[in-house]
Image 1 (cartoon, rainbow over the protein chains, first blue to last red):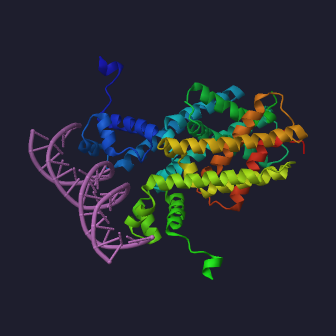
Image 2: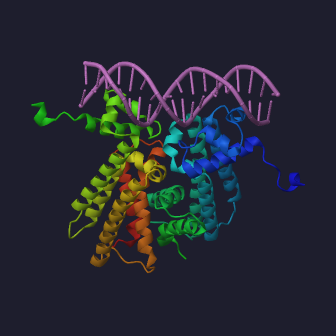
Length: 201
Length: 201
DNA sequence: GTCTATATAATGATAGAC
DNA sequence: GTCTATCATTATATAGAC
């Protein structure tokens, strides 16, 4: 019955979820393969049966991040988006960023170490950004978003919002703030604060 | 004559500037005390004559960051600040962040490892933020900045600008953009883009 | 102050038994 | 699949000669 309701995670799966948790809690450099194995209650050798090295674990976690993004992008393809849709899309983005927060904390170093990982991450991220742009464009078309005089303005506002999405939770962590639903909501509020002067509501 | 024009830096000084450069280039975990010593063309043992360990080097670099901030705060105490003053203050902030960019890239992990370092960094940063707030308040008083209806708005806008100041250059690095004067200027532009709807100019 | 030599520990990783 | 045993490598750090 356990098999049906809560399937026992495979060893491989436990390694990945444990690694993600430890990386999020302590940072990549602070967590060795030995630590991960110990936290999984398996031997160090066993870990290497599933992954050739630590980098491969990181790479797989990045692939899951990418998959979650792709998934989230699918879901947000509603055709007559409202500001509430924007609100929930932004909140969903924050959730993903939080789930894989160690990556966003250490992006520069992690991407520099692995060209392949860098390429796939940036590609997915680019798609997300463009989806976000389409969303705002549709608001402009619908008159919800008043187009600014300066044609560069929309691009710049988009970039600010995207940066907030990626770094707001890190910023909260730096401040020593416990991250909870309220923290995420505050991040949503900030993005709407930036856009607010252009919203005709 | 060399002594007068460009004094030969002490070994201690060379260790610090070399460590800063390597950390900025490669990240903290990637650079060992051996690497630093080699880049200074001194023996590993000699490095330990000046610093008890790697953490002490990092801590000293943080102290220099703090000193640069304090210094910058002094300079920005002009009494009838204009928007151009704001512009140059923001640009100066970006310069400091860039000079010590490894810290801003890895803030969460670095601060967690050292409570003392964390306390002093957050204290200085808090002062900088409050100085920034005073600046904006003075603009409100002078009528340059139109106070928004929502009383929370100013706080939120300030927080967005501060976050931009701390993370914009990291964001550029993630994008693989070479950081130059233009990149910094773009960061200044973004902050003014956020504030622009409230400026009566 | 600076070096060489070395101690100690941790890490990433592999081989082979079960 | 999982473990034990083991290794090569690297990193931090110290002792003592010069």
